[in-house]
Length: 200
Image 1 (spheres, rainbow, N blue to C red):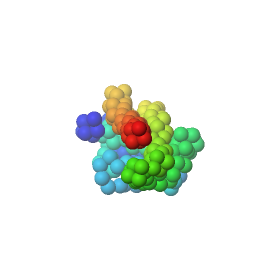
Image 2: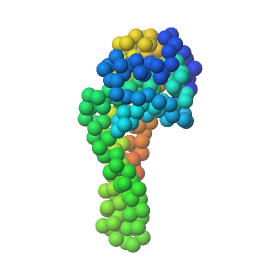
Image 3: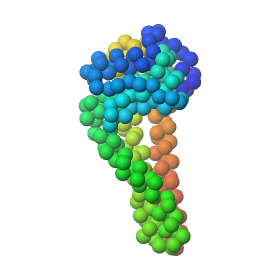
Image 4: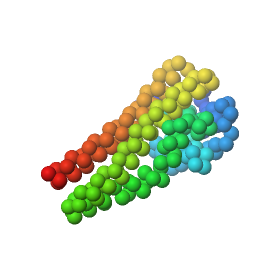
């Protein structure tokens, strides 16, 4: 979907980096610094240092896909400015999730090897933190996409036809987060089933 709409130029013809800066200023957000990051689809907003980084294929592009992706990141910046609760929660648990993720699998399998159920239980609980993170991410991403479409249409940056393309790109991106959440839930269930079988 990204490849398809990265070849469709917007009527406005302005690069995504310029549009996203204008979107933020129009919405009263002057704190965010906009930069460029290497890679493809590596676009991200960092709420801890108020930076919005656009990938090489998005930064200078005036395509429907580029504007959609850039506006999505602007949507997250607006979440930060407005104190959007799911974003605040996700940001707060990131350090904990990083620690839990690195320890969960080793502790779980160590518990299996040592036949010590409390250790496998600890591993499962730690892994559950990443599942919680994946679930908390869903409202953040969907809300940012809705904000993106609204900001682009309200500001007259895209036509009605281009809005359809933006929605397709953002919906496709959102499905990757849904897939990640489902995968995490299934992995958590798998660990629980393995632990239960070993106890039996």
